[in-house]
Structure formats: C-alpha cells, structure tokens
Image 1: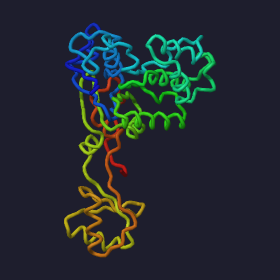
Image 2 (image 1 turned 30 degrees about the horizontal axis):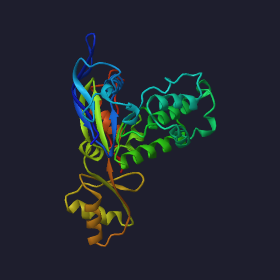
Image 3 (image 1 turned 60 degrees about the vertical axis):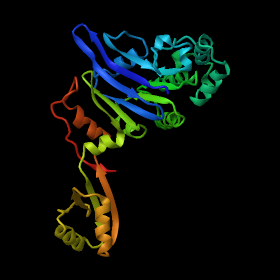
Image 4 (image 1 turned 180 degrees about the horizontal axis):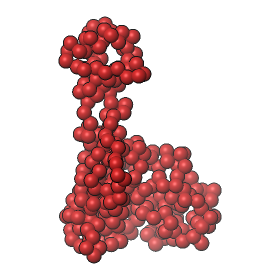
Length: 312
C-alpha cells in the first residue's frame, strides 16, 4: 500500500514554526483535501514530503521510503507545486520529453499526457506563450507522466477556466477510484467539497482535523430540516404538538431546528399531509472550515462570518 505518512514533522525557519509536530497519513483510494489558512504550513509540508526541504524534526515518507530514496521517482510520485517552474523557452513537448528520458519513462507517454491535459495542439509551442491555465495543465501533465501511484497537487484549479476545473475535478476522482493516493491543497472551499473524500486541515503549522469530509460537515452543524406543504397550518400544529418549533420563512418554507428530513417526512406522511419540498440542511465546507480555523489564520479580518446552514 502506497501512502504518505507524516510523523511528528517539524520545520523551523529561524524562530518561526512553519510546521509544528505534525502527524497524519494520506491513504490510497480517496482524494484527500489539504486545507488551511495562508501561512498554515501546507506548502511547506508538501515540500518536506518531496524532499525539497529538510525537516527540523520528524519524518515524511511515501510508501515507507523517503522521496530521495525512490528510484525513478516520477514513476512513484507525480507532483505539481509551481506551474511557473517549467523553462519558458522550451516547448511543452520538449519539457515533458526531458522529464520522461531522465526518469526512464516511455516517450509515448508524452503524447498521452498532452492529450489528457488538452494540450496536444500546442505541444510545439513555447511555454512562455502559455496562459496561467495552460501552464497549470502542463504541470498536471508532468505530474501524470510516470503513471504514478501517488499524486500531490498544490492549488491545481488555479488559473483554469470552468471547463478546466471540471476536468481536474473528474481527473482527481478517477485517480482515487483507480486506487492511487491523491493529496490536493486548495483554498477554494466549494471546489474542494466537490471532489474531496477526506480532509486534513492545518492551522499555524498544527493539525486541526484529519477526518472524512461528511463527518467534518456533520460535526460543525446541528440537524435542520426545511419543508414546504400545501397545508402549512396543519403541519405546524402537528409538529408543535410533537415538541418541534417550526419557523416559517418569507419564501413559505418552514424550518425545523434539531430535526432531520426523514423525521418530518414520516410525521407528515402519517397524517396524510402533502409535502411539496423536504430537505436536510448542513453547514457548507466553507462555513465549517471558517468556524474551525477562525483563530488560526495568519491574516484575518475584524469579523468572520458565523457558521450557518444551507441545503445539503
């Protein structure tokens, strides 16, 4: 099993603790979203995993080995940390060819990943002519070049257009379904909620959460149901007699705190009350994340939005 294992990882820059005694694992078969405010230590942690920096203490291994010990590392780990790192005077194709030859990867893979990243038609163009989104696609193509078991992406949606965002979202989910280990750092909460199965959240270099996505959302919000019916007065009276406190909104829908949709639906059905709409609500990932990290952001505004609900 190829996993990323971080154990008591610490990195000091002078007196600053960029990473502080961090321990977590990234498992195969799921997309792990790597979240945290600016300055939380996400990029530093990824650099430490990839051997681009040395830890002050602790360790970070991939499949039980340090990255520097891996033979032909692009066959084991594909990573995108900086889309601007490719030499601007090279063509996209030559950039990938250089990586392939130096890692013992079949040359045919260059054309395959150019096609997968939607860059086949511009493979002969110099990278310096590329937009940010095209450079991002090229960086992802490079990460996929060795058909790796582990994929690490830092802000992969940065610069992508809507079609590109859908593409990278589906790509990450497919890689996880194939049993690969996928770690994705992002500050786009709504986007992360569309692809992540598991979350690792940092604050000031420390671990704040290591938890499945749904469990995290459930833990940051209480049950709430919303219902719309053709017999609102009757349903309200019935729910009130059963100990609920329904509140009507301006849109005609009723909100019932502390209740799940299944409970309200069963009560309405037993009484023969028609239901036009019935939904559970919970905090969005963005709301739950802000609630968790409110005291751990390096730069924060004077006020932070409080956690509220939206339809699930």
